[in-house]
Amino acid sequence: MRIVIQRVSEASVTVDEKITGTIRMGLLVLMGIEDADTDEDITWLSNKIVNLRIFNDENEVMNLGLKEVNGDILLVSQFTLHASTKKGNRPSYIKASKPDFAVPMYEKMISQLENDLGKKIQTGIFGADMKVKLLNDGPVTIVMDSKNKE
Image (cartoon, rainbow, N blue to C red; front, side, top):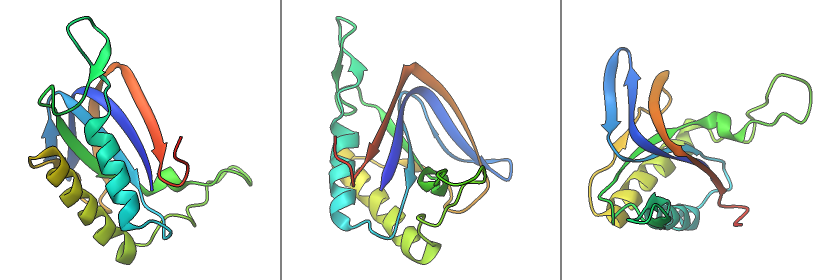
């Protein structure tokens, strides 16, 4: 499972000109799923997302987590995170899971994040043509892969 986390002042997702998810301060999380992903990947990444200390404290040092700043999460599925650009100029998405596997994993991640954060999160619509709007704060952008835990 591969994710891109962006600390945002605000973010929203629109599908067919209708906002499906919107947050103020918090994290926009783009999530790509592959067939090798498991429930352990979900648990590990959710814990990291919720507890990542990337919000400024009173000394302007990134030392606070999402719960401490009462931030929100906007989770957006994004199969293109598993693009392979090794050969040619047209990316291959062969590693990205098909919906029959990816949708249940995406739904499990929503539940896990809500459980770990202690409140409802906002989402896009899996597989839809989404327009994501954000105001990156910092900018702070972090990439994580549950298969490469650095």
